[in-house]
Length: 159
Image (cartoon, rainbow, N blue to C red; front, side):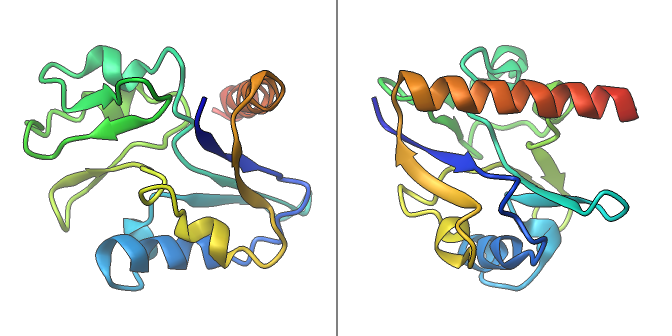
């Protein structure tokens, strides 16, 4: 098994250093809209949650992609985006249950986390270790799936 990004929402302060680091790593500019990670904040509750592609085992973005631009990397849990195959239909954006595949009109591209080639900028920028890049095993994968389900259910309640 490989590595994946684990989120610890109980540690997140909402500083958004991860967002700025991501946009700079990927676009060489400080443009939060170009980040592959987003921090959702509920001020009344005092909760901030960093979110990026969950690399779903049954990835809806892969299932709906008519060209194979969204595809799973062979032998990995990573979902990859190939811009050269993309027709910009944005079906992946619609299919993502977490809203973690987004269309950027500035670059005419789909933006989603690719773990920065195994060196995630968001992880390095997080001052409180709310985001970690850890080895995947049955225990850590189960924890990530449980968190993802809770987050998806919470989003559905709000919507």
